[in-house]
Image (cartoon, rainbow, N blue to C red; front, side, top):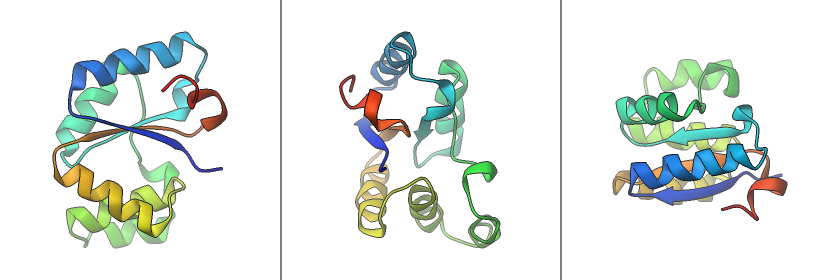
Length: 115
């Protein structure tokens, strides 16, 4: 099943929504943060105790490939690894280019009614 995603331009609003998701019973392991800026991604994820799309979510072949990829290619690969189609990954990566941050929930059955 495809993850639920919501785009943000306001980090505080995103963090409020993550807290609400957790309060409603969404597990930390199902909540991911992704932005074009690794430092921003890590900072937000750390502040709300959420995940980033890392080694455990990716195929080892893609991890190695990402070492030599441009940032956009790496982000599209990460999005595909977590469950989005190539076309969806391209569209979300364009949003990331515009400075947006993605909140991705891999338990869409619970999250869709909350986001």
